[in-house]
Amino acid sequence: MGFNCGIVGLPNVGKSTLFNALTSTMAAQAANYPFCTIEPNVGRVAVPDPRLAILSQMAASKQTIYTQLEFVDIAGLVKGASKGEGLGNQFLASIREVDAIVHVLRCFENSDITHVEGSIDPVRDAQTIETELMLSDLESLERRIVPFEKKARAGEKEAKEMLSVMQPVLDALRAGEPARTVKFEEDEQKKLYNQLYLLTSKPVLYVCNVDEASAATGNEFSQRVFDMAEKQGNQAVVISAAIESEVALLEDMEEQKEFLETLGLSETGLNRVISAGYKLLNLRTFFTVGPKESKAWTIKKGMTAPQAAGVIHSDFEKGFIRAEVISYDDFIACKSEAKAREMGKLRSEGKTYIIEDGDICHFLFNV
Image (cartoon, rainbow, N blue to C red; front, side, top):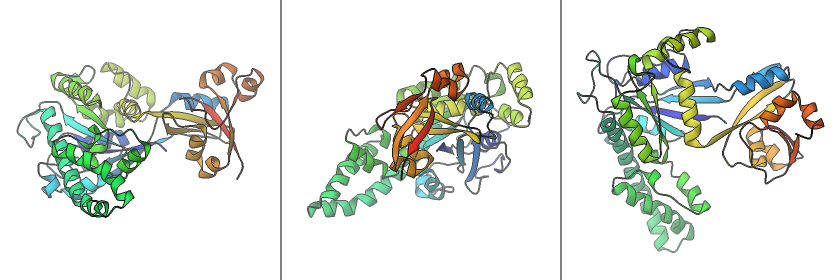
């Protein structure tokens, strides 16, 4: 399952540099002028999880398969993007299908790199992008609501249900609030809301791109972003795109670790983005382990055993019988599935069991 993020930001904030570093590719052209990313670039990276490596080694698995994180690098947006300024709606459309928005904000001074606004103010920049996304949502919703209003007046039940979702969201957008501020209690309304595919319904992870000297502690600019994110219920991380570019050139993991330690850093920016992304989206990881392969699977928090089985294959969910489950800690302590079974640490769970992070699962099904 994994998750995918649309990377957005104003021109010249380090967006493409960060994309190149995080995906260890040079597919996106990083240059000091606007719109250097002409097509949305997509990069996939394995989500590092030291638990999987340990499980794979213990089970002598032939393959170790990590879950995937996908980055979609969107061209730099500018004021008026929702009206077609810059590269406009062509790139706004690329954001609609992602799970979360990674908003890169420039939090460093450098006279050699121009800023489209002429000064450094990450909160202002965040508001500029948010406004463009809201305007795009507003235009889209105002256009789409008209036929539902006509059908509702004619007494159509489904149209009335859709209106009960669209109208409060439209009211919020007209008041200058993003769609994500509107909350629905009923499951059916939540389902209809998700079908709207609104840009401002996405959770936001702010990436504060700082200079090398501020990579470990952040700075005044990044602190303002963290304060803003906390008020919104979003997440923020500090990254130096310049450092990440250097790390990406080091293929040896030990060299990467030593290099980061000299800068007072304990992990790469990719790891921090993943950790914050999982927290933002309420994601959990479970494992399947065996001699053929050990594999990590990403699910939403609160998923039941049949739903988790369905992530592997839809037939697993349709014909679900039960799940044999061992917690990660118990598996490590017992050193094998056979020993865990012998020690009574392997549990048989039914359809209502909620998968916990780190569970090692074997699903029994019949189709």
